Image (cartoon, rainbow, N blue to C red; front, side, top):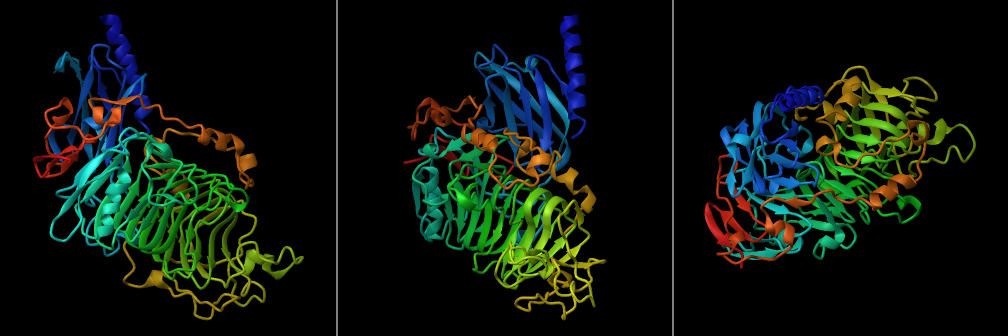
Length: 603
């Protein structure tokens, strides 16, 4: 026993050192051997070694909105073979969380073997930018404090039930409902324009295209389409490994929709497309990798995350892994009021973003990390405020089409002055307090200079509220800057110092999925900073990517792939405790679920 106690103490010391970079967590192991516990954005997680006698585990959280230990949903407890993991979602920010893992032996909890982790800190997602500006409620299924909205429903989707999961959806304004089966048909019901009940769709593990039902968009993949109602919809990943492989997400006619904590790889066209008549929409903490190689300028896929036909959107805390064309903003359609902040452009090539037409674009606190073509690009009369970003070895940090660095200031050979960015009229960029290092060229406006008063990449100000003079205009198109960022109606936000951006964006609460996801790849700056070609090794690894998820405990509907289960069977007895202390409903993959505290059976 002394030897075992010594080993446990050594393990605890190692865990404390491991977790100290994020927060001081105290682990107390009994029978269960917790190996990791930490908080993240509106969630926390724990991992532990398999306990030989346990058939399953019950996991409880305390702190934040939970005064006492409260059991988390069973679909959040999973096996990865050599270890187990649980994630608790929908948590309010607090520093007093605890998690308890109890083994279930012979059908009963063995409390004597339960282990705990305490002192866990949970932070809120960073809710800033135009998506949240003048919003009437939280974007998606959650309040701004991170807890589920009243009456929210939760749907768990895995590879085994993506085609069969069922849910009642409203289809007319008289309250009629239909039971929709398969994730795409459930989402299709929003096209009726009447379903507004908050819904959190939680993705567990890897979903490949073959795991999915017929998808709504042949070009993109999963289609989320409303009829301009407040949809109150969040599609989110559980833990660090929720991934869409072989398809992306298309959003149309959406209001109050959120995508978060997902990996997207090998998609046929765009990874994410906010396309056509969206408002108050938010995509954040996504890992977006290569798409399908179609050659030419689509060798790395098409757009990673494009915004078209959209107003009031925020694109934030996303990690782009060597993307070719990151963020198109407008395909000559109406796009405006979009914010890009705290994104990690990790050796991606161009379009960070590429902006047309939009008159209110805010780009702040992004990390440009070895970009072979350019950072922000402005054309077609757009106005962009570029603030407190960190540009490391970004070839051209900012470009205005047909002038400045885009045409080498009009000097040199015809090939050098033809413009490598766009032949369209220029847009205007106001730049403030950006950190720029190892660029090929960045030419700020210089008043009175015969060359740089015409050929410039941005108008750089010394003070945030300094306005761009009306006489400063683009060389092609004669566009001036509208100074939208100095208006009293501009939203409230809290930018970080540019020098701190790399550490924040790459840190524990930074860009991408929880723990930066389960897929890791290290770029060689010496060769990849200037390389715009596909990295074959990275592409091959993405193509071969497989999940390490073995099973979801106590969840035959999520692991067997069966359809709706009849009442009276073993699977027809889900737990019935409330979530978040509210009347949130729990949705089970077997189509038996709790709705407003009443059992309903999918028909």
